[in-house]
Image (tube, rainbow, N blue to C red):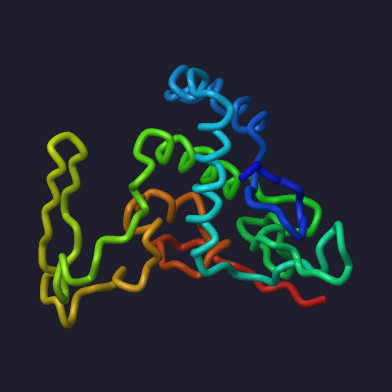
Length: 191
C-alpha cells in the first residue's frame, strides 16, 4: 500500500509525508537511525503510526467532506475543527504540530518494533492483567495483574497505542479525550 498523506483526503492513510518525517528526524536523537531506513520502511512506519493514532478518541469534529471528493468523508480523524488546545484552534487546513510530532515519534518506534501494536490474545493474559514486559530476542513476554484490579485500572480503556506508548498522552494533550493527569483545558468551539 502506498502512503497517501493528502490532508483531508478520502483515501489518506497517513497524517504525514516521508519528507516531513525526514525533516523532523534531522533534529531528533533517532535521526541517523531514521535516515538509514529505506522509503518503503518509512512509509510503513508512518502508516502504522497513523493507524495507531486513529484509535485515539479525539475531541472536536472531523472535517467533512473530503478535499478530493465532496461525496466522501475524509478517511482520517485529522484534520478536525471545533476544538482549541493550549490556545491553538484546530482547522480543516492543518494538523496540529503535537499530533504530527506524535506521528513522527511513533513511526520511529514502530520502525524499530513493527509488532508493538499487535494485540495479545485475550486468553494469553487472562482477566485483569496486562503485558508488563515484552522482549523480542528469545521472545519473552510477562504479564502482571492490575493492583486492586477491580478498583484501580484508570487506563484500562486506553487504546493499545497509548498502553504501549504512554508518553503519547503528553503529546496528544487536550486534543484527545484521554486523561493525561495534566491541567490543560480543551475548549469546544462552536461555529
